[in-house]
Structure formats: C-alpha cells, structure tokens
Image (cartoon, rainbow, N blue to C red; front, side):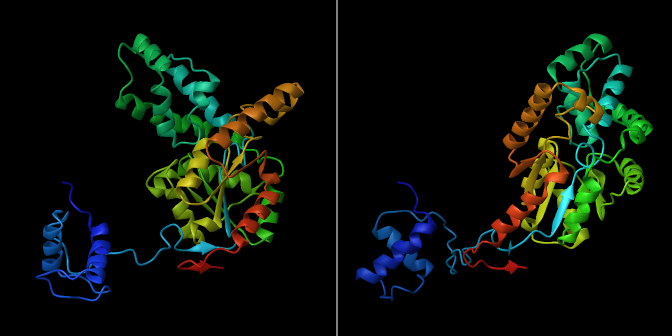
Length: 346
C-alpha cells in the first residue's frame, strides 16, 4: 500500500477529528493540529502508512499564495537594456561574423555566413565552441588537423579572436540611424538605459567611446566576464538592475536582435523585445541591405521576425527607433488592475 502524503494527511486528520469519535484516541477540535502519536494511531486504524516517519509537530502549509515571481509587481517600465552589435551599432551585426570567418580561415577551415551567425549573441568563447560543435565543421577540422577540435583549440582560438575583433571594431562601429534620438525619447519618459553584450570589456570600452561621439551612451554596460556568465543566462540583466537600482525585473525590458537576447530577457523575468530589421539575421551592412531587391529585403525581415518570435519575444519590431509604441503597450499592461499581491512597486 502506498504511503499517505503529508499534504493529504492534515486534511484527513481534520475530517476524522471533526466527524468521528475514535475509540482509544483523545477527542480534539477539527481545527487543532494532531500530535505525532495521534497521526500514527490514525494511520494504523485506517491501515495506511505514514509517508514521513519524521513527521514534525509543526504542520507545514503554504502561507503566502503569491508565489514567485508574483511576490513583487510593477505598474510601469523603469529601464530598458539594449544589446550592442545589430541593435544599437553595426547594422547587420557584421563585425563579429566577419571576424569569425577570418578566425577559422587562419585555421584553414572555411565557414559560411550562416555558420558564423548561428550562435551570435553568446559570449564569444561559447560562440567559437558552438561553431566547432557543428558536424560539418568537426569533420573538416579533423581532415585538416588530424583530430576533432578539443578544449585547447577553443581556448587558443578565443585568444586569437580578441585582437582580430578589436582590430576591425572601429570599422563597424557606426550607431544605427535613429538610435540616439530614440534613446533620448526613452529617457524623457523616465527610463534608465543599460546594455549587455557578448563582447569583452575591452571591446565594449572601445564601442562606448566611439558611440558616445555619435550621440549614444548607455548608463551602464555589462559583459559576461563581469557578471560571471553571459547569455542566455540572466546574470548580466541582474547586474544591470543592481547598477541602475531598478526592481522588480518586470519593470525592465530587454531588446536585442538574437534569440540569445530574447532568452536573456526571459530568464531574467523581464520583458523581451526582438529587433528584427537591423541585426544578425539581416546579415548585411545597411548600404548592402538597401541595395537588395524589395522582395529579398522583405524575405530577410520576415525570417528575422519569425526567429525572434519563436525564441519567445513578447514583441518584435524592426528597429530601436520603433520601440515607442511597444513601451506604451507594456506600460498599459503593467498598469492593469491585478489581484493584490505581496508587494507592489511604483
């Protein structure tokens, strides 16, 4: 016979005390808590074993029905966290893709643009590891180097990636049109502006200097190394919240152009907004993209929108400059009356 779970035992004891008079047991009001001896006696009478032989005097029950993440709610957005390449700078996220292609070319492995972009948004060491894990790349690597890629190869390539990326970052550092003006509008509505990335601190510092000259400066910037881990984990978002002194996480929105950006926002318990029209899935500079036939442009945009929607984005727009109505919608959703929770933050 299966043991009686404690969650059901309390209810059963209450029913027994309230409705039955059991021979040999002291009477007790239905609202009282049974002692361990009473619990064992009742279970013996009804021939059901007690699930926990160490049944405690204090009967456990859920006291607060507002379970996380509903313990604290927000009624408006307070911060927006933006990605870098493909979202605020470097239309088409060209710099990291070109650098990955160069990095593998040095090792006599040709990778496609699609292979270079598959893991975009992750910390760059994980990006390299992801490319090396692809079956075609592993086979090509084995043919060239005589063995499959190993952890030491990841470490060595990451060390080579950093100077390669730094050498070309300024070439692809143009702030995407409309971003500075949009960020000023966001600040005017009371939002703090943060940023996260898959880049290293040295790379981000270079971008911060270059983008400031073009009118865009987030209030804080986080890299994977500073938060202990990168996307899709939420730790850079949590550290942004600390530095901006914003909570709860539902009062923060994350916007970016890759599925990794979306997962970062979702795992943090924040709003996740996809930027489809300027990022990784577009895969071209702005000038190259505008030279495409209209049907090809629309095809790339449609694919980018679907990818971000499937990643779980709450909203998808084509650029940071188009975020205003999304922010309005989120504020409207947060402002809707909700059942009283344990806490409410204005």
